[in-house]
Image (tube, helix red, strand yellow):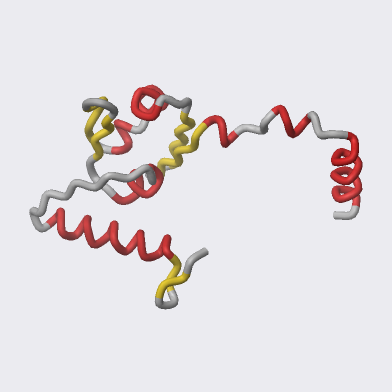
Length: 118
């Protein structure tokens, strides 16, 4: 983790998002390009999904769906809703990969020894 003036980069990013939200509430139009979907879903009131043209636009709770995100990023996405929160993950990175089940014998032995000592 990178620390800037005693604060992590993620903390500074959240401060920037809050500042942008305040400026937007004062009437300033803001255009932000990012792939940080979880921060956008939590902090911004309106999103535009773009891929060679506008795919969808609206409130994150309405727009961030697996279908819309697949059209936008070309990948299967998992979207979880919990009360007023949205969590988005790439399906490929959120599932156990089959390679983890096919470890070479030397790694399998080391892996099982490591797990028995925990």
